[in-house]
Length: 114
Image 1: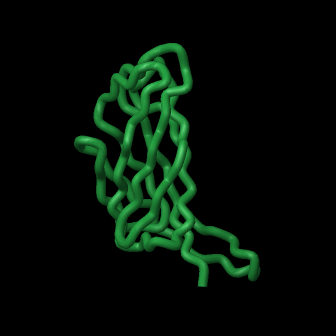
Image 2: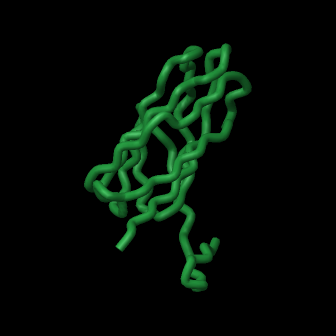
C-alpha cells in the first residue's frame, strides 16, 4: 500500500492486522485493521476499544472507520478517540435500533505531524 503526500512523494506503508480480546489489541503499524471479539452492543450502547500502538503519541491524529465483520445487525460509529503515549482509547456507539450480533472491523491510520 502507498500513500501520496502533499509533497508529491510516495511512501510505502505496512498494513497491520490484529484481533481484539476484551476490547483491546496491539498493532504497531501506521495503518491497520482490527477484528473485534463477538459483540452484542445494544442499540445506543457503546463499546470502548483500546489500541496499543508504539507510533501513537498524545498529539497523534488517528482516523477511525468501522465495518462489519461477522455482524449482520447493528452498526458502530466512532464517537471519539483519545491518543496518549503508545495507545489510544476509541469509543464507538451503536447507532441502529438493533443490537450487534458478531464481530466488526476497526480500520485506523495514525498521523504524526512534524
